[in-house]
Every structure is written in C-alpha cells, then in structure tokens.
Amino acid sequence: MGKLIIRGGVPLRGEVNISGAKNSVVAVIPAAILVDDPCTIENVPDISDVRMLLDILNEMGAETYLDDNGVLVINTQHLKSSVATYDMVKSLRASYYLLGSLLGRFKKAEVAFPGGCDFGYRPIDQHIKGFEALGAKVELDRGIVKLEAEKLVGCQIYMDVVSVGATINVMLAAVKAEGITVIENAAKEPHVVDVANFLNAMGANIKGAGTDVIKIKGVSNLTGGVSHSIIPDQIEAGTFMIAAAATKGDVLVKNVIPKHMESLSAKLIEMNVKVEDGGDWIRVIGTDDIQRANIKTLPYPGFPTDLHPPACLLLCLAEGTSTITEGIWDLRFQYVDELKRMGALIKVEGRMAVVEGVKRLSGAPVKAVDLRAGAAVVIAGLVAEGETEVYNIDYIERGYEKFEHKLRNLGARITKVEE
Ligand code: EPU
Image (cartoon, rainbow, N blue to C red; front, side):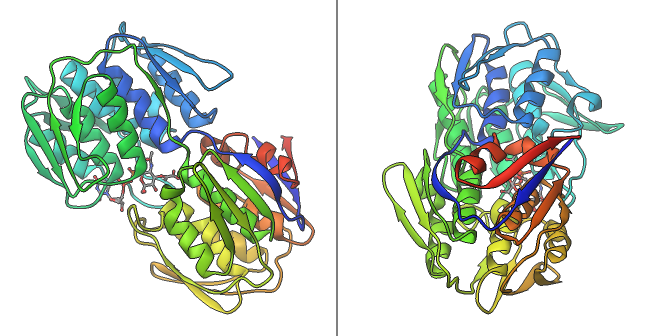
C-alpha cells in the first residue's frame, strides 16, 4: 500500500479529462453475463474495482481483455459457474450485481453477501424483494445469497427506498423474464440509464430508465456484438470541480455531461464560485470569497452523497457557518475527524454536520477512511499549508483513475510513495 505526499497551496490550473463512470461500469460488466456473444465496452476506467470484477469473472470462466485505451472485450459464453464465493467478492461491494445477472442467465445464483461497508450497513432487502417478486426462491446460507427460479415472470415492484443497486439488479434479472416488469420508485441516477442503454443495445426492451417508473418487457434472447461506451463519471467530475474551487484555481473539466452536474454546479454558483459549461465541458474558476451554504444529499437529481465529503471540505473554506445533511448513508461522517486534524471546525449532530469556515488548514498525516473521504482529504491537502500525508490510498484507487497523475497535470505538488 502506498501513501500520497502533498505540498499544498497551489491553485489547480489547466484541463482534466474525466474517465468512465465507476458506478456504471461495475454494473455494465456483470450485465454482459446475460449474453453469450462477446461485447465491447469502451471508456472503461482503470481502477481497482474494475480489475477485481474482471478477476471474479475470469475465475468463473469468462474471457476478458482490457487494453490500455480503456476498451474491454468480454466473452461470457463459457461461464462455467453461477457461484461467487466470499473470497472472490469480499472486497467489492458492487459484486451484488452478479446476483441479478446470474439469475437472469442461469435462473440461479450463489453470491456471497459482501457485508457492511465503511459508512454504514448496506442492506439488500429491496434487491431480494425484487428477485422474489420475479419468482426466485431466496435463501441466505452462511453468508451466501442463494437464488433459484424455475422461471422468471414479469411483475410490478414498488421499491420502499430509492436504491440504485436494487433498481439495476431487478432490471438485470427481468430483461429475459416472461412478460412485463414494472419498477416503481426506481432510482434515476445516470448510471441506471447507462445500464439500460447497454441492455437495450443488446436487444432488451427497457423503457423509462431515468424516471421513477421503469418498464421492462422481457425478451427471450439478447445478442452481443455490441459496443457500448461508459458515460463520464459524475462523481470524479464533481471531485475535480470542487478541487478547482477549493484551491481557488481555474480548471476545464472535459468529457462530462453538464446536465449530470447540475446540483453541484448550482451549489458552487450559490457559494460564489464561477461555473461555465458547454456541450461536454465545465469550467470552474475559484474565488477568494467562498460563501457559506447548506447542502443535503439526496437521490439523483439531488446533491449526490458521493460528493458529500469533498463538498464538506469546501464548506470548511467558506465564510460563515454552513451545514451538510446526509440523506442516504448512516455513517458518512467518519472523514470529519481527519479534516479536524488539519484544522477544520466541524461538529456532527446526527445526520447533519455544522461547519464553521476557517481561514486556513494545515498539513497533517491523515487517512482515507473510504473512497470519497479519501478524495476529501486529498483536496484538503492541496489547500493546506505545509505537507499532508494521505494513508490508506487503496480506497482512492478503487474508484479514481490516475488521481494523483491528473492532479499533478493541473499543477498540484503530489507524489505517490510506495510503501
Ligand atoms: N437500501 C435499502 N435496501 C436495499 C438497498 C438500499 O434500505 O435493498 C438503502 C441503503 O441503506 C441506502 C439507500 O437505500 O440508505 C440507497 O442505497 P443504494 O442501493 O442506492 O446504494 P448502492 O446501490 O449500494 C450506489 C453506489 C454508491 C452510492 C449509492 C447512493 C454503486 C456501486 N455504488 O450504492 O457509491 O453512494 O449508490 O447513490 O453504484 C461510491 O461510489 O463511493 C459509492 C459508495
């Protein structure tokens, strides 16, 4: 495991290219299980979550080839197993997408429950509810979720909570079911739409992805041979936008879909940061006078929970008192202690943090407590006086492609030291 060493105080300037979306690709890759023929997936980010997922599929008998340009060819024709053991999936939360795709293809699946996570218990009751409604028998045996169905039959499912994972998983299981499945109170995140587009390109009949009612008309077969390009990563783009604002820099964030960034762009403008956008770019120009704001994280199109820790860091640099309220996860505030070590004034009360703006942060040894918390402490290091050492960076490498390299290209003094 390495660490990052950052010498802060340099405004970020220049251009950065955003990679393919982590939370889309970790669902699109399992979706390829639903088809026998090879598929090509482009704009695949080189992150450890992708490498772990490909290792799992290879172990199950798939053939995968990811080149240096982010083009992945995946052939699941000879998949010999519908089982993913705890050892295979324990480090990858998104392995739950194997449940929906294996069930959709083999009518059975055995996937170890990936367990809790670093910011709270992650239930999959809504995924299970969906699989059962489609006709699967579900058993939890020694930490393994076992699904089996004689046949899958379309049905109407009302999600009790808006869940990205459950929406996509039910979509995966339902594309080849008999008849029509309707998911109500579905998640509307851009990656839900991306997965639906990939499945439709292979012959699925999914309508309404991106709204809260998704209709899936089952088809008997999907055909591969398609080439699908992963959408730009909304959260990586947001992280660079916040880094530009926090360092009072001027950054052109390229290969983005500005529509996906609206909740953040609006908040930055409210905070007196200058934001311009065009077809596939957003330019963020920082200011000496960042204004306070209140933020609440919500399902899309609300403010994304995955930008909560970096956004909180920005509030630390604003004039006056701000609040940030977490609307999705129970334990998302663990990064707060790390920012406090750098001089931040944050008080957590339940699901809300009250943030007192400070004039300066000072460098310190800190750790990434999860992926997005890691991004927040890196940005804090870019802003802080003196040197910051960031530990546990394998969290960051799970979801940000070449993070320190991209920051260095923008002028940041950041180096990775292998330990
Ligand atoms: N929930 C349930 N029951 C379920 C599923 C979810 O109660 O069966 C609850 C969760 O406890 C949570 C809320 O519903 O309170 C939303 O969870 P969701 O299912 O939407 O989250 P997820 O699919 O497990 C994805 C992203 C997360 C992101 C959340 C919310 C992937 C692989 N992960 O998780 O991304 O925080 O949606 O937008 O897509 C990250 O990228 O750092 C990350 C954690």
